[in-house]
Image: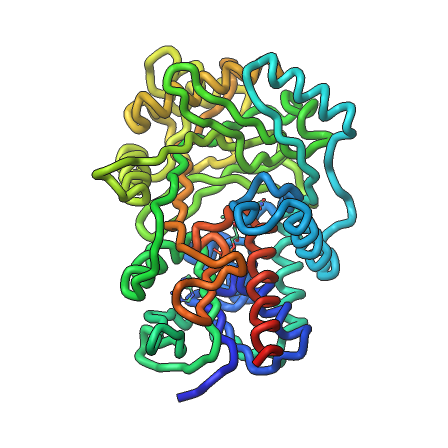
Length: 450
Ligand SMILES: Cc1cc2nc3c(=O)[nH]c(=O)nc-3n(C[C@H](O)[C@H](O)[C@H](O)COP(=O)(O)OP(=O)(O)OC[C@H]3O[C@@H](n4cnc5c(N)ncnc54)[C@H](O)[C@@H]3O)c2cc1C
């Protein structure tokens, strides 16, 4: 059996940043395992490649680094505000070192206050944040640069699916792979992302780790002519708004705004959902963003992931994949057809989406809450609640169960760390990367105290 000092499961941003932290500090015996391919072998449009392999879901992401302790995860429950801000800036600095662009988007304090005032008048909260936009094309290159930098300095095992985390007497001992091979380690960092959320939930069960059910976010991706949203996106790039729907008091929020971007399909096994991204070097005439409704379920139901999957499957069943609908058709109670879509001034960037009727898919509660927020957004972006706005469904964010962790992200099994999106801890690149740095630094301390 091969032994390493540290094994990392998952080569997404969380795993890569943990590796960088350990290796830059001189730890030489580190291995990283990923079920997907190496970055140079991955192709954006090939099913599993979008989310799995070196770079994880980050490789073809939009690459928005949002510098705010309020968004992208719950690390603010583990670290005091100023400490987390420093950690996020450290992570941002590493992205810059590997080629992220210098430009930072964000509103001046006066403009942010003005937008917050307008948002309040429209019944929403505005969360100010600074954003660095790497872009899908550059994001891939940045993660490739990290791979090149680490080449020969750690053992990289791609197309290697970890089946089990092994333990003895409450302490981690290593991993075993789906092909039966076993590897020993003093420390294991598990960073399996959202694509590994189900696997992590099962591991947590087998290892008797305490965990709490997380929310599921279900919604639609909205696409409009980019010009309509320029007042929000030109300087700020992304506008984070939070709304509580009058009918249900549900939290609805804007998510992942992509000025001049495109809507894409996202595959989770047999489920196809939608997402969005944009390129740094190529613009479409449209802007897209998601409106997501957060739901927590109470006793006796405790399977939010299964609930979200069920709704996504319904859209796939009716549309043979994602569905697109004009807002005017939805409000008129009729399906969209190819000819109705062709009369829309917003040309869909996801041309493979089937024109259909989203009211057959989303429960009333979700649809009503989304429409109420879209209407409220008229106060900030006039004409968004218009004839020509396109809705794509469904967008679902499956968050892993939240695993009980110490402030330094160690689980109830000694020397086992669980980080990133797969721990239910983070929801975006910067916090996932920061969680990797934090776990790496904790292990460095433990090694030096030994
Ligand atoms: C289209 C798209 C656009 C996005 N845009 C943005 C954005 O602009 N800004 C932002 O902040 N976030 C964005 N995100 C989200 C961001 O990519 C994720 O939050 C981030 O990648 C999470 O990092 P992670 O390391 O925790 O997990 P992941 O990046 O998901 O990586 C996990 C890795 O673990 C591997 N794995 C899982 N289980 C196993 C196993 N059992 N054995 C071996 N390997 C395993 C997977 O193959 C995967 O490579 C986007 C995501 C997508 C899909």
